[in-house]
Amino acid sequence: RKEVEQDPGPFNVPEGATVAFNCTYSNSASQSFFWYRQDCRKEPKLLMSVYSSGNEDGRFTAQLNRASQYISLLIRDSKLSDSATYLCVVNPGGSYIPTFGRGTSLIVHP
Amino acid sequence: DGGITQSPKYLFRKEGQNVTLSCEQNLNHDAMYWYRQDPGQGLRLIYYSQIVNDFQKGDIAEGYSVSREKKESFPLTVTSAQKNPTAFYLCASNTGGGYGYTFGSGTRLTVV
Image (cartoon, rainbow over all chains, first blue to last red; front, side, top):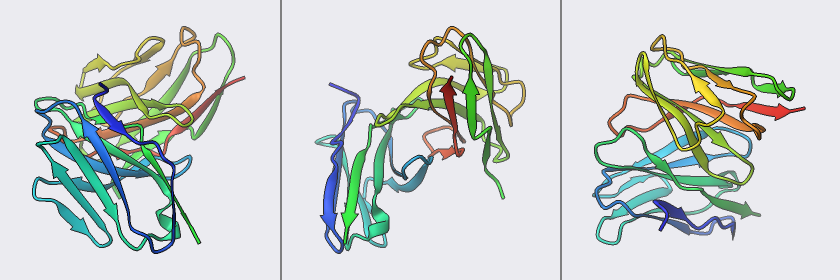
């Protein structure tokens, strides 16, 4: 089993739709989790951290399920500008070296 | 404004040539990293450094070398031993301890 797995997609949704991505991880000792957004031919940028209690930032909600070892990202009211690749990042306990998933591609169409 | 600067943005390498990619940060971050990204692929770790004058190999270090003589700088040399160097190279930094990364804007290297 890979350390961090994501469905590569693409997820093709209309504007205004709600879409959710999951990211599973294999190391149960992992301590911190993040979602990054990467636009085509650009660098990844931090979208949000994922806390045990879950967190919300506008239309974006991130959640952590430690029992099942996955994190999720929910995007409500999708915009055309949300089209990008979403990378999950899992940081193993005791290490500075996070592991990146390969990313999930989202395409929002009119 | 604080950030990470990578240069050049585009780089062309001839067969058998060594090239060096620059990465400078003014965020006062302790840890710095180099990643390689191939089209449609995820990020693969080349080298990382948690402190000045120390660095560790990542998953795909063969054919690459680094130095960390200053906290602000972490240059990557792509040597002639790297047989397939064409890729998008990303430098990142963080304060360590699981905090999120800040990335540079990347260097696109092409072998000609």
